[in-house]
Image (cartoon, rainbow, N blue to C red; front, side, top):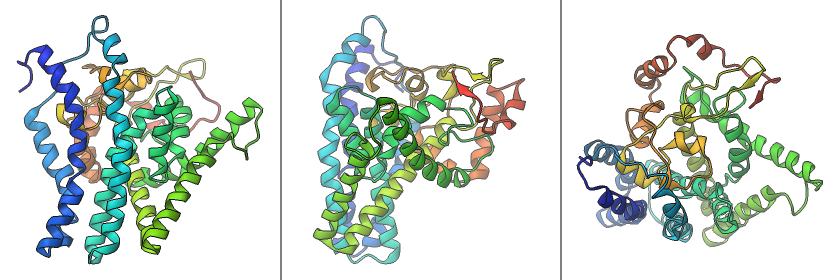
Length: 382
């Protein structure tokens, strides 16, 4: 559908198309309004889930894949420096805060049944995964303090600020090795992966911060520990929700954060399933390349997620900004965008039936390595 478009037109469409992330913002207020005014609030509490995991995958397949990669010499330098793209991500911070406040108010003041409450919490958590966690991920990889701290703040709003530390110093170092809890193993189900990844990554964040401060000669319990600051912000937000809405506001705030974090880890499951870095003769793992992440080049979901799906390039070159991430045709390719893959991952027999053959095909003649991914305490990532 997009292959015949003029290249300059495609670049303009992509530039302003990133604003499509804000299309999902009014879905929650609109769903609430429809439900309250029609007396069907329990049904409409689930509509955002239907939209993201039902309507978007269909549109994704209709629109098709992105045919363009930025030219390294003529386009990447300019695109990388253009401030408009930075403004887009920073705009998400106040928008998400406002949406989170509304969702909490609606949860406390709407006559939902238990089923409606579950739907509203899931809808908020998933959209928090798209706004707070996905955009936070882009920002924590950037050096300017405004962006880096904005990313940390977004993670604090979903009580998962440890990800800022663990992702950079843990996941990106050990990705696609047995030492990484966010890299799912071949034949591992998402339900086996999810609780282990969430618990281990929170604990590991504190360990990594402790080691970092020790290297700097600074005390662990001090103002230099960034995790104390981020979790203090999370606690302060919980207090604000409690003062404004009572105990139900605190319950909402905590649960939406857990669900947003779970959304993140399901995506982690998808991004690295079954992939591994080969163990070399010197006892080190090979360096990270675009071969160690699943790639998806579907146009619509790439716009909605600031090109997170071009994950192969991101892991190979973590500092590249989202607007200049490239598609690698020879990387492992997912058969759909993240929205459809998310649903597939939640049905393990179907996930394995679709994805396992792709893993085996990618690792033809070295399948033995797929079944040897056990933690090796004495191995060091190269």
